[in-house]
Length: 188
Ligand code: M6P
Ligand code: ZN
Image (cartoon, rainbow, N blue to C red; front, side, top):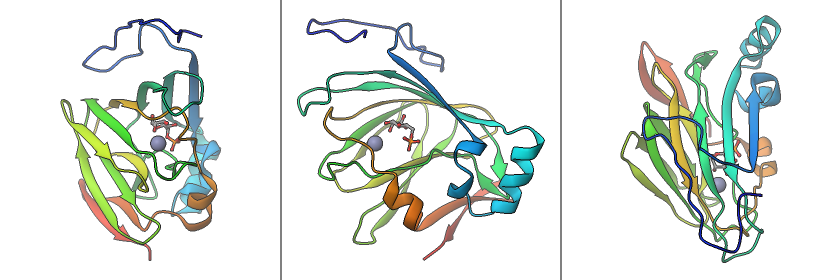
């Protein structure tokens, strides 16, 4: 584990790229998240064709304690599934009352968020953007550009990830490629 109870540093390329050190690397291919997309038939066709890589995550892990701040970098590739942009799974935090900060590094992205009460929001994530996700807001990153989307993130060590709610209900808002321009589809 890179993390230690002493100050440490690492480098993250500001134009996107893997951090110089990390504890965990993970990939999500389309087959890992078929049911997250609106058009399952389109997802199945792409899975059968080449099961494309959707995103990669480099994490610097910490003890899962409130005072700790796990952080890392994500690369989200460009593409669409049945017209819906490549995206992360999206999640609530297990500890609902915990937030998250994103820093846009490269590419053109959107952060789709919503609360259990039904508030929804979409924010642009672009190079040099810092974005605050307040406690209670589920969040999903979407690549609406032609190239890779790179961003850094940090959240409280005790936050945890609740994917169950999103698998069950999905996000209220979905981002679709409407003739080269992002359009919002409201699902409920
Ligand atoms: C960001 C952070 C991570 C998260 C990752 C992938 O990088 O929020 O905590 O794991 O996105 O998103 P998801 O977990 O929703 O697939
Ligand atoms: Zn999160």
